Length: 78
Image 1 (cartoon, rainbow, N blue to C red):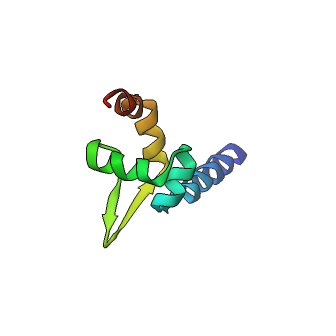
Image 2 (image 1 turned 90 degrees about the horizontal axis):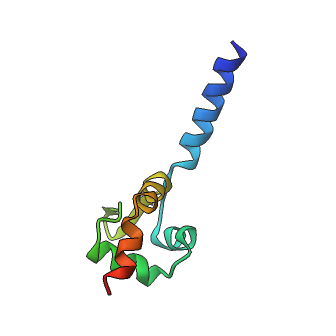
């Protein structure tokens, strides 16, 4: 029973960390300039969602994008 409760707590904590972030926070999270994020939106398949005039990102999707190697491919395309 304790293991089950612990797994639920871990899952809920993960869910709380996986919220939508804006372009400024995404840039800070990835360690790049927000203009770089805007270029990636135009030129790549960075996981982003347009909500009105704002771009939003999920940290978990950004992590997967970086792990996939697609972000490194962008830098080599110049």
